[in-house]
Length: 59
Ligand SMILES: [Zn+2]
Image 1 (cartoon, protein in one colour):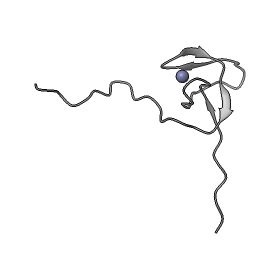
Image 2 (spheres, helix red, strand yellow):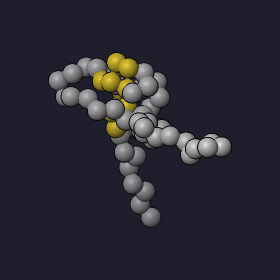
Image 3 (cartoon, helix red, strand yellow):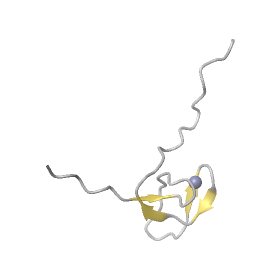
Image 4 (cartoon, protein in one colour):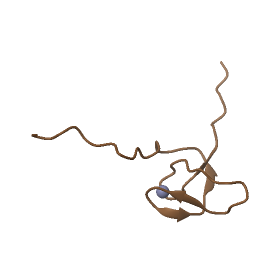
């Protein structure tokens, strides 16, 4: 059985979340860490989901 190669993404070096980076830029923006120097690695965490709220607590 063949195992698929680990996908490599451009990620934030701090949280290993995928970030979008322009090919001509050396920096990317992480929603959590701000401007970062991205690294090529496997994704360790799912992207942050902005506007995601926990279910209403005791509302
Ligand atoms: Zn980050």
